[in-house]
Amino acid sequence: VSSAESALGQYAGAATDGNVGTRWQPQTMNAANLTVDTSAVPYQQVDRFVFDWGERPPKIVRVGLTNETDLASIKDAKYFFEMKPEPSQLHNTSEPSVEVVPYVGNTTTFGIPASMQAWSGDFAILEIEGCNGCGWVDSPILPNGTEVLGEQHGMGATVGEFEIIGKGGGMDIK
Image 1 (spheres, rainbow, N blue to C red):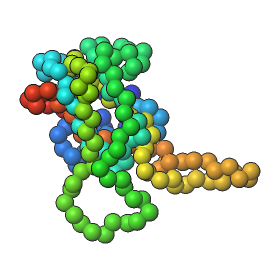
Image 2: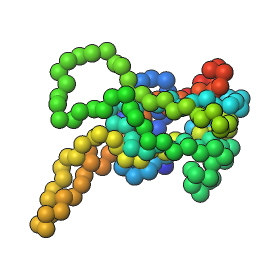
Image 3: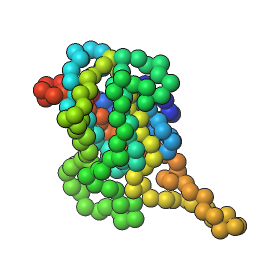
């Protein structure tokens, strides 16, 4: 379930379908979240989060692990994490790609600090905001010289895969 309208063909379920060829992309650069029902997986201590962003990684990522879905804010989750991703690749919008290469992925892994114990719950909430390295397009200049920013037509970042990995390595919530 997503809090924002998705770009055409870029639906929320794509972030957890196990297929790196599909993506979730909200139609906004503002914070948009995705709630994943993880109640079918036994509660386990969480070791890390793994993301495959595609060509449009977000500027800010928030993850909440909780047993509730009616939170006023993702920050109200039992376990809350805020991260600034450092994707393995940034898409260069100024240079067209003419070379065909196998998919490598644009991934980020966030390990849970050893000093903190986090446990899975019935729901995982993923919130993304902004778009890292997406470039500015269609930015008109007003008569007073102010640029009206229109980052990639206002479309949000993409999430190809969102995974939660347990301490023992056996849990793989997608």
